[in-house]
Image 1 (tube, one colour):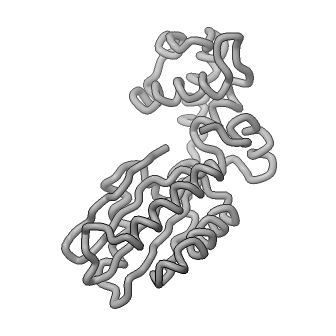
Image 2: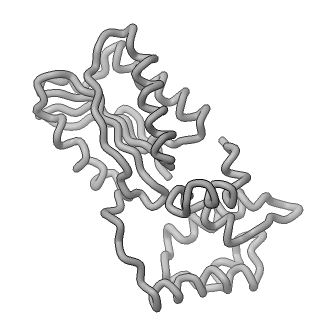
Length: 215
């Protein structure tokens, strides 16, 4: 789903800062414009997939294989990697980029005495912006708590979010109430264009990922 900022990454950068952009958003700023065959958003998505595989070893010839990327843009992208090696950036924190690293964020709810909703917001590099908890209550509070979660997400200028429900006696098969949390969360995420990286049930016995997403 394309959101408002998919088509306006420069505006998002200006108002929220560079860390608020996803990899696709950063590439849109670099690429600049699309072609008659593809929008800049679609081109950037394809380039992002190439970079996921090749990283900083990518060559101009590999980038040119993406329709809409010419020799000039390919050269600019490769040149940015070289600049990054010459002017290394101080790390702002750990980047959570895969399922295994995300699981470490669940650890503190495994042994809680009350059922808890954990939600973690991330910037465009997969760094944690904030980590919060809510006590899971009755079915009547689901919609209100989901609204609270995504209000905080917007307040953080988050690019993505992780959710988990758990406590020491958490069943790893979802109840109706827990499925309602999942349903409302994904509906809201789609509406706002904020991807949910994972929604899991967590207990001292293990982790059950109900749905996975990604960036």
